[in-house]
Image (tube, rainbow, N blue to C red; front, side):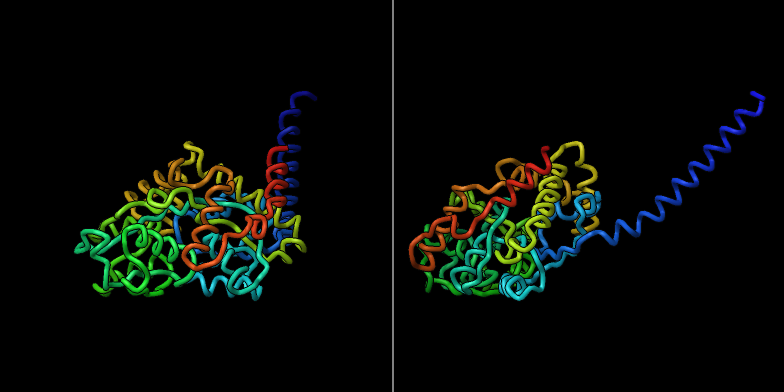
Length: 335
């Protein structure tokens, strides 16, 4: 009777595998149906690599989330979209969130960081110094937020005040770069990765990084409407846990090759540009902030810069920032 045991064992295993396969196939739709849709809006830039990685690696799905990723052309559309509920979460310049409170009187809350911007101040090839910008145009996103303010401050530090140059609100980094290439009057702009690499190839020159010229700066962050955060506290916590987990994954050197592939596919970068972008993204002094932590000094500088350039007094960071969801996300990850 033992002679037939192996065949019987194989038969049992075949049945077992079949049952497991059926169960798995039946479970997939149920799992998909259980995922909660989260709509995220951001600019098409290199600092979105953790979002792409989290989708590709199933990190959002693991945390019960189905991500809908939207890209904006300018901060005005993005701020309006968040306020009207077109999407749930914004990954954007911290100052855009501050502007929603101070200018549009919308109650947003910043819930996590991202990076210091990875931005540089670029000029056309014929511009030899900041003084050469006088009488020409600085290309910005919107005229009164984020990297327009950093551009104005950089020019002010170099002897140019508003009125010494014009402003062209063209939109995101790609649109600003296009404006510089299409019209020689548009001589300067703050550009981020990976567009800054394209600008270098086109012969444009960096006069320095924003952080190098202005000091610590919490350029980008994650923010939501406060009412949405309170109504979706658990979902927001899981979203932040997934995002931080993916930031950790991206910054892990063992995942370099996978990151390069993702950047080539999602950002349409050449192998050389993908390699250079990844080097900068993982540079501790320039790239993604570990665990998407907010730099307290950098955020205070955001508020101080807005007050200086736009007028008024800096307000307390607590008016805009609530880290209880972020702290809960870290506990969820590290338990």
